[in-house]
Image 1 (tube, helix red, strand yellow):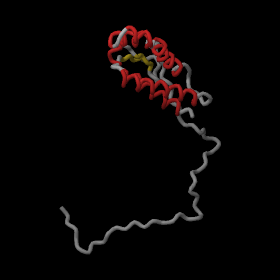
Image 2 (tube, one colour; image 1 turned 135 degrees about the vertical axis):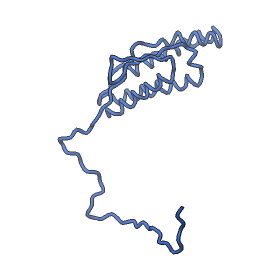
Image 3 (spheres, helix red, strand yellow; image 1 turned 90 degrees about the vertical axis):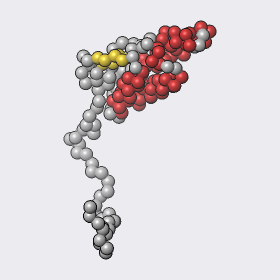
Image 4 (cartoon, rainbow, N blue to C red; image 1 turned 60 degrees about the horizontal axis):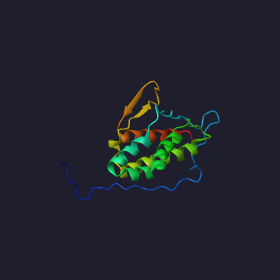
Length: 160
């Protein structure tokens, strides 16, 4: 291995001040080029997920019938939140609203995963491929649902 010599020169980096004649702002785009280069397609769900009955069964089994009956509206709200988050296609006009709905559904999935063992719900999440809609994939894993929702968040952000 090489050894350091005494008196060897050290490399010094000299910082130069920007020239007053050089613009530091990014170059403007030509009017012929579109501002958006790529917009991701939105993943579509193949069929609805019955969150209400799955959560009701789980809570009846893990807690009690009384607790399950007291949360019927909340169980239905999970399915409605999913439906609203995935109801339409993204565009420049609705991107902000869709981002809010997808974020709400994603946060709900995270909260449910912390509270319950979602793998015991026996739900199957079926999604169509964004680039080949004829291809669909279903998983009983809640993380698959979360990943698909995050993909759709990225798709919506590509429309902004």
